[in-house]
Structures are given as structure tokens and as C-alpha cells.
Length: 273
Picture 1 (cartoon, rainbow, N blue to C red):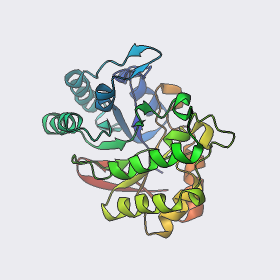
Picture 2: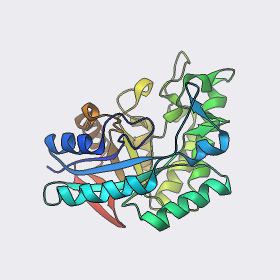
Picture 3: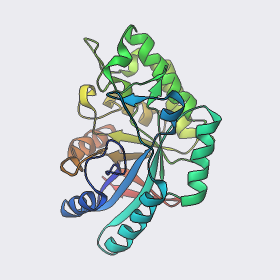
């Protein structure tokens, strides 16, 4: 069986802990055949002047990241397929989208992850996103932001971690369920399918359970005709690479999925589960 883990982070990301060399060595030791790094390009943060724990978030060194990534691809050639991608934090502002387009044109990432991190002026990963907001309001705002992001002007392969806003939510019941947000989730899922994008199953779920989106949302995606899914541990340090992969694959098989999709330089590789 070919093992895949697409969408991970290194110390080139402001929140990554381990070097690219350490992450790749760990992925290889775990027997991965396809390993994707998609470090953060947080141009959504720039417009909002967001910080973490009072500290500004430094921009990624694009040139150094892609240079080292291409070097490491050559080093692992014949031993492991290394994909050097990019995670774009969606923002509607033209300045951010222009920078993302320029990144793609200049460096040609092997794949692009489209993510929603910011909503209502905050990064909705953090607990303070919930302050002063009902659960319905906070989650609907996030989901409609995801829906908007599907029309991003840059090309992308993967729609990442739907349910991100619930990872650290402070509500008594933080889980984002299909039945409560069916209308907007149906529109999101239908558009993902219509645009030929890949829905990511992300095992860095925290309060959402073992993975996100939840099994109920994945089952609805399958019911609507969606078949393209990717696995991501979203690891920010080496010990978490491929975490819960077997749990994710078991759930996908139970729903009816038969393969994982790996995007690679415009191609799609379908790996049997």
C-alpha cells in the first residue's frame, strides 16, 4: 500500500517547529510514498495586521522555501515522492490575491492548498473567535467565508480543513455537524465537485474529533457524487506525520471511498485506500 500525507508544515512556516530536513527524514522513516509540504503563505494576515500572542507573524521567505524544497526533492528522488506546495490563506482583498498569483507564477508550487483561516477580522482557529458570538453565527460566518473562497482567482487543488473554526471553539458542543448547517455545506460540497477540486480530510481536528470535516459531512459529499479526497495530518512537527491515517482511511472506506487523491504538478494520482 502506498502511504500518502499531503499538507504538512516545516519551520519555514511561522508556526512550524521542525526543519524541512527533519520532517522529510521522519516521513521517509514512516514509509510514506508521497509526502507534501505546504507551508503557510499568510497574506490574509497582513491586511488584518493580525498577531499571535502579541507577536507579529513574519512572512515566509518564499525564495528560500522553494529553493530548499527543490533541493530536497532531488535528494529524495527514487526514495520518496516529495511535493513542495503552498497553503494560501484566502482573503478577498486584491492585494493578497495578487501576491498569491505572483507566487504561483514565480515559483510554480507542485500543488496549492486553499484555506480559510481568517473570518470576521480574526483567525478563527483561536478561542477568542467565539467571544461574543453565538455558535450559529460564528460557524455560519466561517462557512460562508469558505464558500466565498471557492471562487478565488488563483488556481488551487485542495480545499482544506473544513471545520477549522471548531478546532478550539469554546462552546459546550463545539462539533460542526452537517445537519445544523446543511444548506451552506451542500453548496460548498457541490461547488467543490463542480470545480473538480479535492476535499481534504485533516486529522488535526482537536475538538472536532479524529478528523475534519466530520464523517457526516464526508458521507454527504460522497452522496452528492464527490470522490476526490486527500489525507493530511497537517503536521507542524515530525512526531505528528501521518497521525490517525488508519482511522481516517477506515472511515472513508466505510462511507464508500476507494482511493485518496494526490495532486502533483497538474496531475492527479489516485492511491487505493
